[in-house]
Image (cartoon, rainbow, N blue to C red):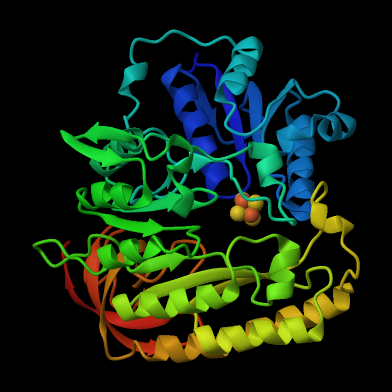
Length: 450
Ligand code: SF4
């Protein structure tokens, strides 16, 4: 693009869902002929896509806005924190505009007002995959916005509203475009993937001349037609998830999986009393049964979950129930947070806040317990051959992931002879696993499609 193009700086903060919003805005900016620049000095205006999920994210977002104001002075704010306009105006009165998440129209309107677009007949050269912030070979696929639950620690429903599902054909067409553009792994995200389509009564749509319901299973069947890895995040343990697990055991003619044997199930706690205070969907006894049933159906299933320790009212007994659950459930991948009160969350009104030192002590015990479990589960993979996707080649090493590792949140496989084998990011490769530790695997190439 020529030097005369208007220039926009972009700061993207927050979770994968916010990343998808950033990609959409960046794509629209490029389509309209704006240049995206890397420094405040080069930018005519700066867009900051914020996160407001927990207090540390709020502070990070306010800092980023402050830095953009100091360095550039023309700043457009969007994203989750945009819902708290007064707070932003209080800290940074000079910002040009503030809008909430997924409000692409407002962001583009503010950009147009600050910096009129240049008409350029060549803008259609923007690849139809859009502009992606993730590496070219994997992409997040957002299937819905909002959430019908009302967990007491969470303000997402008040920021993003109730569940709104994207029509299934719309999602499948986006996935098709991404795969045409070189994506080899699709990461399905939403606030509650298992609720997909409830709001539209599972409306039927047509894709590639076949009818699909707007429903998790039908979506996964459609995505399996694309011949790439599909990984599911934020799935709640409802009975109908059993059907999805069955699909994970099915293979294409070439032996590849129709759906990765991987499930990210945010459980948050295991004490029924704390789950009730959290207003979480689902009972822990039923979750135990579901996990056992899933492993029966698909023995090599990787289960990932996240938990909160130190929730208001959590006693040592509640915490012990959580540790016992970890022992029993033997989850493969686990993330944990010490409870942090988010402004506006109803959980802040609960009595018996856990002192910070106790929270941190419990978090450390929790992570120690899970590290032991993870080390044993990873050790069991030594001596096996794992299908991997290469993310990075760094020196002699290639860094890849097995079907059981999501990017950015799970472990990796270090392939010692990666460069020698000619691996490149985006290659699928069979790796003989020779070693393991608490988080990662180590191996050598068996064969490659490179
Ligand atoms: S399920 Fe609960 S934690 Fe997740 S987005 Fe909905 S309300 Fe928030």
